Image (tube, rainbow, N blue to C red; front, side):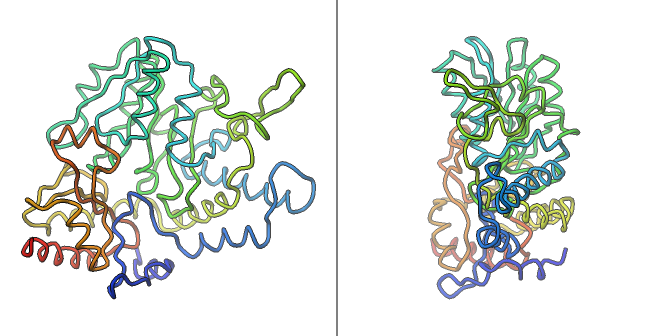
Length: 395
């Protein structure tokens, strides 16, 4: 990977913080955008802006084509049918769509893990109150990897859904999702995979994973905010009613009732984020041109390099990890570390990372998190390490 050439595509990397060049290590939260994505969004508003599926005029037809091509590109990126690709606002909405559209009944069991992001925990907690479902939570091992024996013990004949993250946004653990989906299906349960931290970094293949649902966000993979994806198999989606109702998701409406549109439009009510879809298409093109296998290897190498260099710190998570490092310097609060790194232009995340139950399990309030992407370098990591050493000496 020619990282120096890649870096030239990201205008924000020219920004200085307190006189220091920006070093952006908060990629788990959101990634920066290349010129190609920014230009695609600008081009849509300057050349093609119109509503989709609404008119026979040229602009509406061009906008519709851009939007539909984005579905096709997404489907190709994850190896699925475009009719199985639903655009949402983000991963959170994608998971909520499943929570509100699947037919859950009192006593149905949902299995999640303690390492889940709040987006894959709170919707199911609400179903406990609303519908009387039973929520079972799988533990993690001492090294931060998922306890597969505990998972097996919690999946049974009453399990309606298993909903597990592919990659932990705190621990960097990469879960064996193919095996998890197989276990769910052996018990006639659906399987939902939270791919917010996997789709941007590793090659994901819906046919290989074998899940019923897969949720992820464009903004974590060089695309714009306000764009999310829910993949669902045709069978699973056909068994669900719409999450939202209104314009464009209907086939026929009378004064008394309505019938629903074909997939995927059945789940895309109202005017969507068309410009966001144009930007997401450009982001998918950009990632594909680099190659997801190369991206995965590069980020893992960066994480390994950083772990080897960080001294006198507690690092959380298994050895086999994605490009995410959560750590604490001894006796120094995570927010203090992030504050002083920011003084030198280094952006890291600190706190509970929307994973409070996991933090409680680990007996801590939060961590410092450095997460890497295609435009980061070992030189940037070296500068962070130098400043961590300085923070340790001063505090």
